[in-house]
Image 1 (cartoon, rainbow, N blue to C red):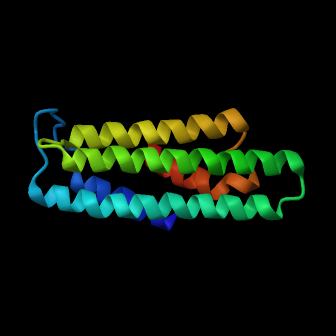
Image 2: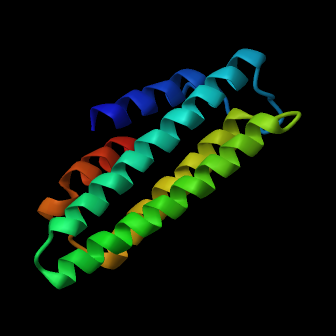
Length: 141
């Protein structure tokens, strides 16, 4: 959860919520550099979440829970790859914008929440998903 908060703070510094998000406003060179750092951070953070879920699945005795945790790990891994790819594209664009970043991150958050809710509607209350639930709640707020 602490790592997720640090990431969200980086994104907020890069694209403050009080900044008017206009599609045409290009990222500054400094924002481009910050985004490159944030991309690496996101990749490692979500990779760690996948590793934690894989580890939880490996020791889980209940086959149903094991399957759900494994599915969550697979989906979050795919979301991680997609998110990193999209954010990298924004950095490489001639005029990537904060609006592009916020939209991309919100789409990833929505996909994670939707996936976990599809696996288990009560995923936020399940002990196997508490850390992930806290992180996602923090992002959504």
